[in-house]
Length: 243
Image 1 (cartoon, rainbow, N blue to C red):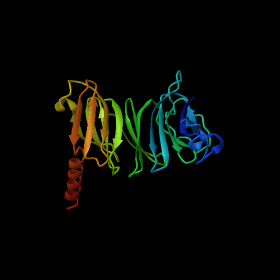
Image 2: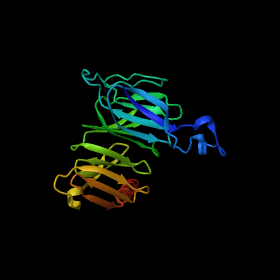
Image 3: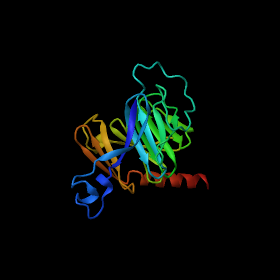
Image 4: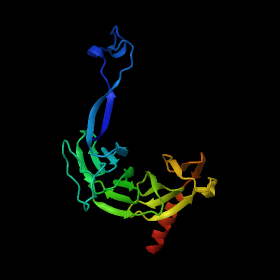
């Protein structure tokens, strides 16, 4: 079964402190090796992605279905909290409690998860598979699902938890988290990337001021204020509707 290991520094030999002949921690000058604190196991397929939320005390893990498993049954409500668990062959996304390492629940996603993310401010869980993008509440309730016409590779929520940037093929898409509506799509070809070059990695600055997108052809595109303009337009539209 696939496992997630949480590691910490090993205690020094003999628990020595200052004044120990063996140096700091009594390790004889050697660097302490990390040792497992907890092993979170339960996925039956290989792990594909994970996201740690220290703000919510949650770990979200995504995996592939177990090899040779029969077709998935109808989606269920997921398993409930337990000290240990063996997930079903098509239970591909799990939520864990970080403080005690307990399994909290599985989410009703039954195909290979390619990206997971946690929107801390809005307390939403996002999952992308090869064919769809899902958003759940932290209690595991499905809120929205869409099927983009391009494959998703990564998800990064904005700091306010209202929007998310997704890599969709050779484009950087901005979607509203509440309903996953597509608000804007930045075509990297227009920014100088080679025709059809897929987006391999991207990052969003801490204050959402810049997005950095790297493509398979070695190009790097930087977008200034990729979501601020969209948020302003959304706010104006809401105010107009309330007039």
